[in-house]
Image (cartoon, rainbow, N blue to C red; front, side, top):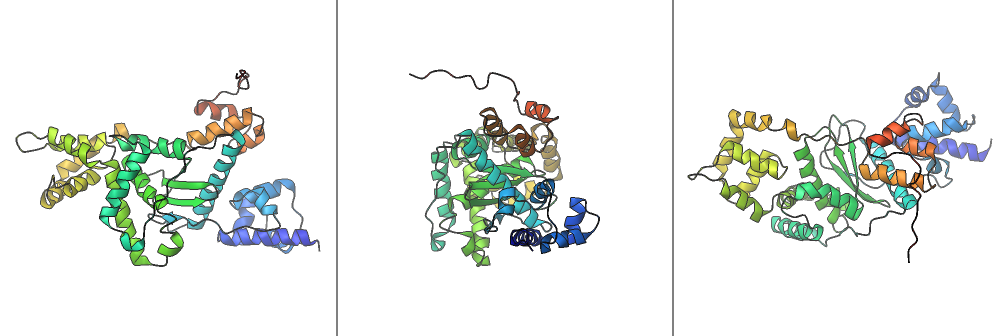
Length: 377
């Protein structure tokens, strides 16, 4: 038996088990008539055709180089979930990491790595507190230059300024997640959540990313009490990032009329900051602009809920399938001759026939002239 074929079979088996797939599952996805075919491949009794290798790599959420590597696969970066999905968690994580690896590769091929160094804050587990969260939020607002409406700038600054890889997956369960790997920091979002919920999740995950080295996942996952505490701290951090106290106070006070504020005005403030009304009300409570009983009464009022819902639809934003920066980098790498047209289509999950249409959806047209140059003196 060829040892290299047996070694490949072992790696395929390892990748399959990491995804918790049976031989039957993989056989069905590959279009094989029997799981015995997968068994033969894993034993090294059957050679693989080129197209089968490519398809297997895709189904196993890896790339061809890793599948063929004699070194096997490395431990994947830890993914921290705000709310972990109950099904296919491993598959989602591997897909997320694979996308991030592709993203980093495109940065290299296009020559477009960001210059900003994503900040790491020194934090001791003993120093974790709400005051620390407020202090870190103030620092990040200043360093990221977020302005008075942070949610509007946050995603752009993360992607363009610091090269944070942001992906949206359509998930029936589970919320945001974050990780840091060889590709840099990354955030995974649930596409099905409301825009203001996603904004809050962005800010929440920033806390985990800026404290990643000081409070590593390997530590906090072993200490459930610390993890629960950090999640609460991250929520405070997110509120302080998205709802700056001085600006919120001004907006609130200018809407007061005869010692009262209308429901529609409260909802209007939440929409201005692109956060949920719940997030705004709890921030107002924290700032002592509303008391606990008032906040509870508002949240329990059906009329308030109806008015709130009526203002949601016009502001509902659904992100595209791929990050716009990812598509732009792929297109630039292709036009520079560093990415084949077939590989470009593969990375954008489309066919060569549909590639022009897919590119146009993101504002790119495959035409002559992109390689034009000017002489620099």
